[in-house]
Length: 210
Image (tube, rainbow, N blue to C red; front, side, top):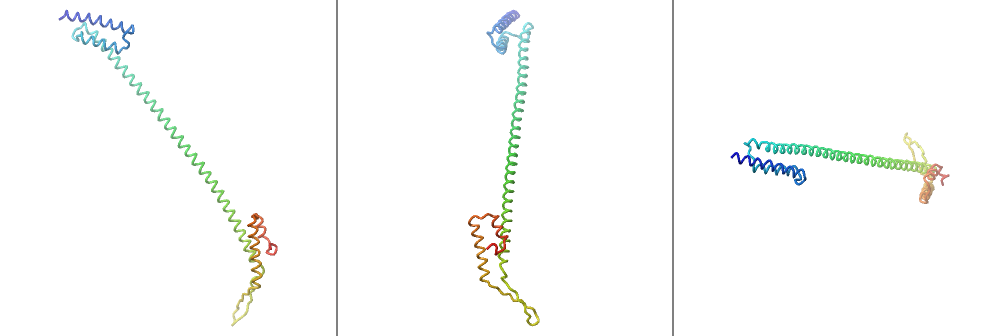
């Protein structure tokens, strides 16, 4: 039994030495491949209870420990890189959302400003038009009402009470004058007379306008 163990020890020593040489000369490309070949050799010839074989087991254990530490370190680096990438992605998403929100707000503010400006202009034009219309109506009304003395009022006393009698004076002439004036103003407007001219016309006495 001891003789067989010694023979196996020789095989392990020569086998490990040969594998190290192949790794150092590039025949075995990676540490993982070197480990796997040494472990296969140890599984075939090694004995954990034989003291002379302990150094081979310790070497294999050392390789496994190094692999575990390297794997752990690699995993930690991957996690860090993933966290960094995730953080950068989240940052870009947040910046993009903030930019879109700002652009949306700016667009709404600009649109609201344009709307307010347009609305203010419309209201201003409407107010001016209404003012001009009221002015023309008022002037025109005054002209129509100033056409001579349309009505005459006579007061008489009947049964102790004063009674007012309204008499239309020369109604046909007054109506003709008003129709003539109205027709004249409408004709000027139809021919493109300016607002200023119409206002100037309505500011004159009826006889002047006619």
